[in-house]
Image (tube, rainbow, N blue to C red; front, side, top):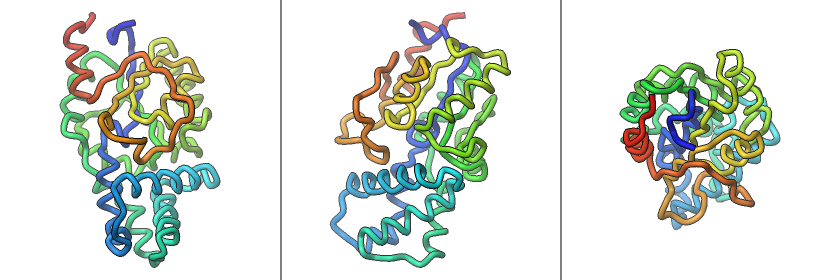
Amino acid sequence: MELADFKALTFDVYGTLIDWETGIVNGLKPLTDKVGGLTRNQILEAHAHHESTTQRYTPYKTYSNLLAVVYKRLGEEWEVPACWEECLTYGMSVKNWPAFDDSAEALAYLKQYYKLVVLSNVDNESFAQSLKKLGVEFDAAYTAGDIGSYKPADRNFDYMLQNLDRMGICKSEVLHTAESMFHDHGPANRHGIANCWIYRRHGKKGFGATMHPGEMPGCNFMFHSMAEMVEAHREKPGT
């Protein structure tokens, strides 16, 4: 199997193209500054728990509203309850989350060879703000706001595959490209979709802002960054 074998790259955005862990930690400072003593991983792991729990119980919530609830739950857990206005401010903070330094350049290169598609646990308004940082026109974007559920739900991958099929892209032509083992690679394995792990957290302990996936999913490719993926493609660009 080679990178050139595929027609479309389907991307997780947050954690893969957008540095959401930095965005989360910065956005939670009004809470964490009051608590003190929390490590970066403790903050991210607590966020992962409340985010995934809220997504599971209220999949109909838009991501910005869901993040507001996560902020409230974290305040309660850390015994520094926040007013709702502060929660809402955090819910709108996705627009401040930075892109990884290599994302825009890598996407511009890959756009020459593939259809680029988004499958993201976000709402359309928040994604529109992140899109400005990525500098590329995706061929399609399927968000949790469109689908009414959040990854790792199979429903999200079913929705994506059905819509890609209408674009003339079959499952065997798709390479799902993501960081999260929990949100992306587990369901990609279940659906029989080839996958590429962008292992941004290499050298760090744990899973950060994502839940532990349980049994580790398999992956067809692994790179530490989008820049590494581009270099591998340049070595064998195909036709």
